[in-house]
Length: 139
Image (cartoon, rainbow, N blue to C red; front, side, top):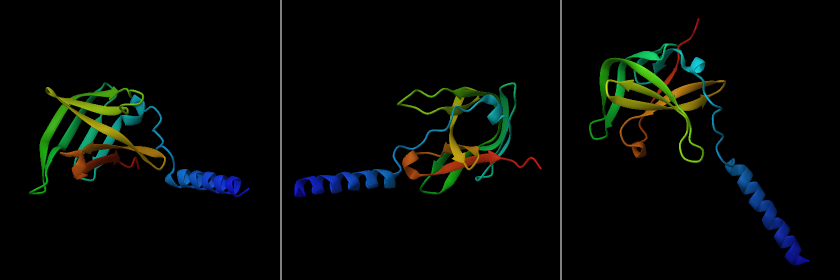
C-alpha cells in the first residue's frame, strides 16, 4: 500500500513540475508577407520599412556588437530584398531575412501580446545583446 501511495505522490510531483515549467515553448504560427509589410522601429534606434514588392529600406541597422567597448557597428542606411525563410521542423525556426548587397541578416519573430516583433542578435548570442523592431503606431 505504501508503495502505491509513494508512486502516486511521485507521479503527481512530476506532473506538477512539468506544468510549472510550462512544457515546450510555443512556436509562433507561420508568419506571412502581409504581417511584415510596413514601418518598424527598434529599441536600438534603427528604422525598417518593408514593402510588399519584397524590397526594404533600413536606417542605422545594427550588424555587430563589441562587448569590451559596448559599441554597436551599424550600417548607416541600406536597401535590399527581404525573404521569409521557412522553418525547418525540429532544427530552425522561421526567420525574416534581409539581403543588403551580398550580405544576409536574419531576424527572429518574437510574440508580443497580439502582434509580432522582429529581433536580431548583435554579436555572439551568448552575450544577450539584441535589437528588437516593433511596428510603428498606425495612428
